Length: 391
Image (cartoon, rainbow, N blue to C red; front, side, top):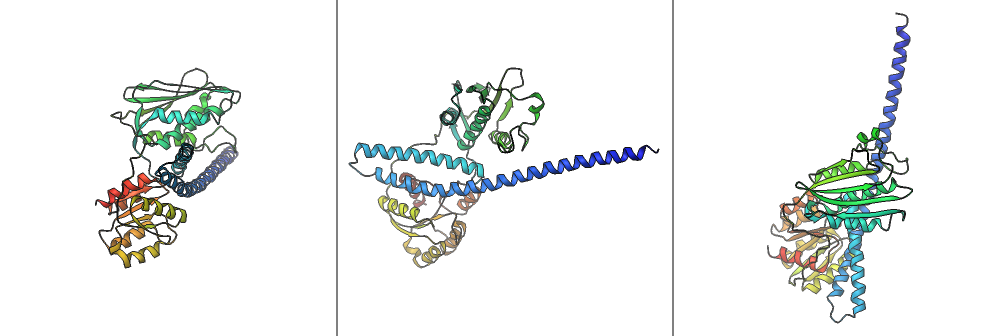
């Protein structure tokens, strides 16, 4: 009986130490989570502003391409600018996906195209001592998913593989068909993952990297994206050297694909008065030029409140309104609701540097005619206007 008290105190001390350790771990996870939220918010804001800038760049490029008699070297320069801006737009899409400032897309894509983009980027970012190999053997490489998010999946796995080979090695990307799935394999010849860590690799915040080299969220995000596509990710469990991840994604029903750089149709001309509401002056400028080129009369205002008052006075003279979703005085949603109060049949197109999300879908369900994603070109603007003017 006398020995029980010391034993009890020792047990309590041990439990208290374990509790302190757990509290410290949870505090560290909370700090990492708050850091990710802050980075995500910053990334989303940067991507939104960058898409506004790209609207001006791509808008003016598409206007210049409509000019007749351009010298071949000018056309070549415009193509280079357009391609560079397209790549920048793709990167902002990835930032928005990271920041969760948009609704994930569900479209038919060619996974080989996405992997080729990853491979092209890796050639400029990995050590020359790492050899890149690929074998795209899938005969039906078409799946349903978000191109930007899947790009993020494969890039993340590839960069992890790079980090596992500081002395060099082989990084391999491959695809095969697998009973209704497209199997994508990302493998490396590095040291591999120790057996005692294999069960933890998908845990949030778990990482074998140093404090300044990772948050431990990479594989968690990868797994989340793959599952959202209806797929699964598996870590090889054999004794072969290196690490291999197999990502199985459901194959699309048919082989129709939509490439990210799909070529737009020729601009459709129209007529009527269009009110453009956007707080960015260069967006208003390029929108006015494009509308004039397409045959429309443009009225451009930088204040949402001023635009609502203008519409109240001149509603009969305005055929359609293009309003940015994020405005400093009134949101695009508030503008739409006030315009609809004045005229239940008002034609409104919502535009934004953020990608379409459920909030925009709700506006379209309420009567908005379309969503126009920034950055947009002359042809995209013309097609969106033509469709909205018909209703």
